[in-house]
Picture 1 (cartoon, helix red, strand yellow):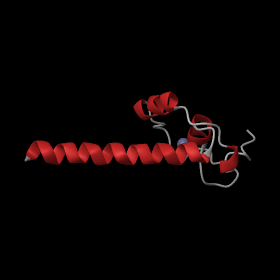
Picture 2: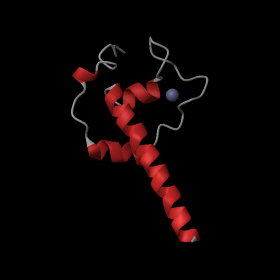
Picture 3: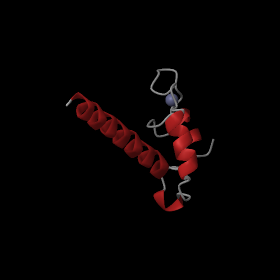
Length: 81
Ligand SMILES: [Zn+2]
């Protein structure tokens, strides 16, 4: 797979929030395993580079995951008190 544009933020297509939501619901669970083939830079495996068209999308996804965890944590604290 030619993913030379994957790291080029200027080539990032508009983010499809519907797709983002789908990925949040169905995260790339196989990712992080030893068998995951990495890209030519050795940074991101195919689970990431096939799901997200550009690094910018992946970073947005990570931000959404983080916010989701934080909001779940806030909910947990609020229900405790
Ligand atoms: Zn992977």
